[in-house]
Image (cartoon, rainbow, N blue to C red; front, side, top):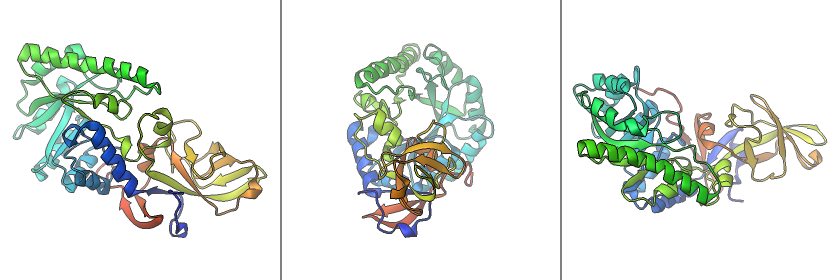
Length: 363
């Protein structure tokens, strides 16, 4: 079995294992689907690791997207030439980003702006060295972003701020999660039409056609077929059980697996594992993990450090038994670990720090 460790005794549980060869194949597939490195701007929120960022850089990727200042710093430290902070830059974030940009002049930093207030905050921090910004356009996620029909007015207002330059439009349609590919295609086309409408309105009024950065993982392959559009998936690098089930049309490989152990045999049909909700993303209802080597178990209860499961016959199991599970949602699961265990040819070889797990590194 590809996920099994030959030396599990060297890994305490719970632990997150990662498989570099599978990661590399996922990166290569993303590049092929995107049509080349110039059209792929992967989000690093899933892995948060300098080691994985270097694998992406080694594959020829030169532009990245992130959600936190710490992730932006991690990318700059790894040598990323182009980093988009895809989050409103409000409060102290602007000064932090300005200090980071000053410390890494060889990295082109940019950020999102969705309001006049946000633009003013950025401009005040970057008055001596203007920052490139993308207008964040709301295409149905209803989380952040200017309404498409208001984008041209916001673009005009931002021209008053000397500390920023509007260089593009950004749209995230993470709400598109339908398994039916034809329906997801139709929904993606509708959301893309909204950001195109914003692009056209700005072009008509100001004579500038701004480039587009769009999409997350679910509509990634759909948006990748459009001409002149950068796509920004993130989960593809590790994949997870949730996306593998929901999006069978996206042929990425599972590349991150949880190792856990049976710590108690409760009764004839009940076991307890050391995989509490401090060890796997807990925002979804049970099951939160799918076990690769125990596919028929039923998780029935979870607390901070324990996961209780129902099995057909507990006598077939033993205390200390090693189980391997794939989380339903990998992104917040990674953030629960200080480091991951790297597995090559079935053997744990080294650890990779989850570099940007903390909210703040140096800046």
